[in-house]
Length: 294
Image (cartoon, rainbow, N blue to C red; front, side, top):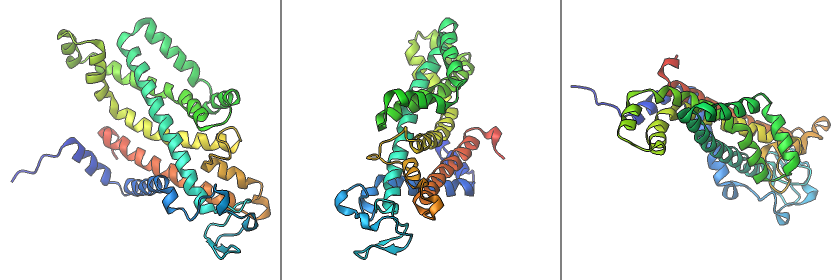
């Protein structure tokens, strides 16, 4: 009997499942996303509801009980907020900012990258020179300058992250589109008189998506780490919209006094989130490009 023919999706899924590390990363990512989505349901308290916190419970160690008898498994911060609940809520902000900024930057990069590859000439040169100038500066430096001008806020940091990310996608899309532009199916589409926009988005784009998926997955982790760094420096999110980076910053001054848990547990959550994303991205790279498979 002949073996059943696998669809492309089934092949990708089976190749992805061949890596135990990738499955571990995927499982960790599912847990992180689930916690972020349902933080108000799974959190022991709302750490930013003043009616649920008591300053007398500040800086309790992991496993200690409050005056009301509630156990704080990861301790409390300097304002008496439950660290476990703070991490759950912080994951919502960190993941939301990372994913949304990546999606918007990816859309912008696709638009400019396809335009540069298709029209060439001065348009291509102009877009690529802008990308070269931006990529010549460290991403954190550009973000710091933008946030110094724009101020704090979720919308402000998303704008900053879009600005520092779009050029990566534009160069990736342009390189892949230049390879595809000279192939027969594109020439056939031109011969049929299809419009440039239809050729770009109906024919070229699906064939340049595989490398983009890998780049976008890695950039989500990069965006989360960059947002955490900016919030740690006090230029990212305000205290009313806490991310993991801000939670780490809140406890930094207490590290030398032995109150390690205020910074340690948010830092561990940030590390595990970034590791999970990178494990998934690493296997996606191998699956979508068989030549890289070990």
